[in-house]
Image (cartoon, rainbow, N blue to C red; front, side, top):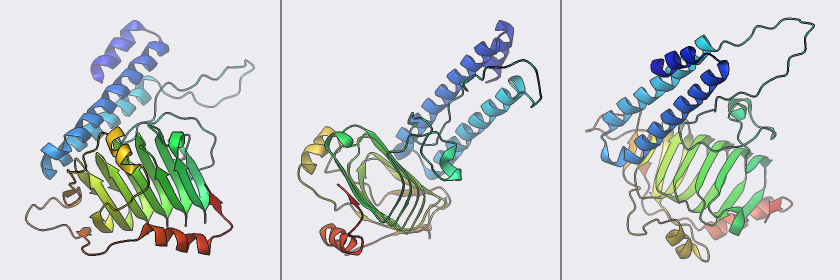
Length: 292
């Protein structure tokens, strides 16, 4: 970060600085993705230590940018100034998904500037299929008491600030990231699963790498059991192995003791869920709100 900053000062212009900070942010994001892809080979302690390093790099980058490119103070002037768009991308811990502002979303997620696939819904049944899902980055925020099905091979899935919802996802080619979910049921097949700041959730999981939770409580985990027509074809499209499922291997970043199980999650045995019945029960309670 310091090297890039000094180089930018020598070249002189604020545009050069902006370009360099953008390049640095992209490089840090690549480090984050490399770490995420390597979690299955690392111990919990090393994952925590490496994540701390990445977080420190992000913070150092932001501090250097604020120092070298301070925001102009508000003042009155007779000269009109044309505002320039910010060149600094917003980074998330998971996959970065480009988008635009526009949707009304909670204050806690408004700064992410994601063009949410589903946002600000309540008491609705929603089913996305075919081209609506295929290889797409599906983003969901601020849902309450909704039943959502993604019948197709999504590229990635992000879920944020949802409560009392059911999410059933077909095979996801890359990662599923969820945060601030409360009293939700989630069925997902993916390479990587990260769950942050959530409580009282049931996860029906098929994961080929490793599942990670952080700042979570009362999480129940069971094998993936969602099905629909052509789901086997979608597993092949997503390059997910049906034979490899590491749903029992969960890393809790808030519990690093190797000898004592984490109290924040546990496996659920002999608890099959009939999603057809669950769907019908939901539709009966919310017959006026559905989106097919």
